[in-house]
Amino acid sequence: MLADRKILVGATGGIAAYKTPFLVRQLVEKKASVRVVMTEAAGNFVTPLVLETLSGNPVSSELFPRQFASTHHIELARWPDLIVVAPATADFIGRVANGLAPDLLCNVLLVATSTVLLAPAMNTEMWFHSQVQENCAKLEKLGYEFIGPEEGKLATASEGEGMGRMSEPDTIVKRIEEIFSERELLKGKRIVVTGGRTEEAIDPVRYLSNRSSGKMGAALARAAARMGAQVSFVHGRMSVEPPQNTDNFLVLTAEEMQKKLLELYAKSDAVIMAAAVSDFRAEKVSREKIRRKEHLTLELVPNPDILAGLGKSKKKQKLVGFALEAGGGLGNGKKKLEEKNLDMLVLNRADEPDAGFDVDTNRVTLFFPSGKKEEVPLASKDEVARVILRKLAKLL
Ligand SMILES: Cc1cc2nc3c(=O)[nH]c(=O)nc-3n(C[C@H](O)[C@H](O)[C@H](O)COP(=O)(O)O)c2cc1C
Image (cartoon, rainbow, N blue to C red):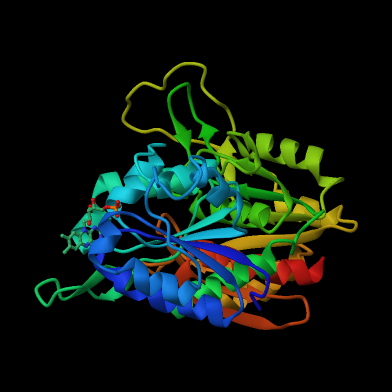
């Protein structure tokens, strides 16, 4: 499965570096060519000799080695089809997020153009530290891929169980195989993804909106681009940054979103509507700030049903809709799919703490015109996005 793939494994100074040899071994068993770069701190947890023996190649760790040419870091960066850093420490993540390069591995990442997969591993408090989270969000936006960390047993008995454990080597290998097999899944396809929330003005300072963060839409747009699609991401306001590998269009209202989609629709192969579009807007937008009073009645009129409109004028395009339901909504999935002439409907639940709005995970049910229904168990929004796109690729 990984035959002829060139994989550079980076190891940094965390306890989980004791698992890096297992990762190297599995990659080599799958016939990948493996070279290892380790930080100085990693040498406290695993020896170069182990990694050298298992990879069958010399291990690099010095930025100024005597035995190689001075541009060793450039040669190393140009070599791989994929770089995986496992474990990735908080310190390393911080250096990369800030474009710093005091060591060989950071230099390699600054030069490399291949996919970089980071497997963070650290203590729970460290992982949830706002600076670490910010660094990861920044790297994600820059196109770095992440795997884990996961919940589980941490390094010491005093830490017990918690978030921060590095994904197991076989999980990382599986993800690497997926990355290679999915790289060209949507090649040549033009995909429009919507995300975020719309805002409908009431007066110059107030608007009607909802709690959508845009995380699901951004995950879909990012993943579709990674699978080779040319992605237009039409998004309202979001609590996250839009990806960098997509064409991004910020729209504020449902009508603006509809206009932009109609512009892109004819040339697109698929539209995925993950945006949370306001169903209503104010009938009249006050030109001045509405003053405080005893009672205020707002007259609302319905916004256009963008998805149903696209469904009606659909030609070759495949249409994927999202629906958010609280309580007994499953029955509505099939109905919505038919009413809007969709090729897939993704039903999220609004009444579960770890799914739907704002959180990083989702649990969805997919509906298809054949009547087939598929449950996608709780997973990160990135993983849910990949499941949806794999299904879509089969329809295109
Ligand atoms: C015993 C020990 C275990 C450590 N484990 C981790 C860890 O699991 N994750 C982490 O982010 N840092 C960990 N650190 C801190 C890093 O080793 C330290 O931040 C170092 O500067 C990382 O360097 P590097 O990123 O260049 O490898 C640990 C430190 C010690 C002393």
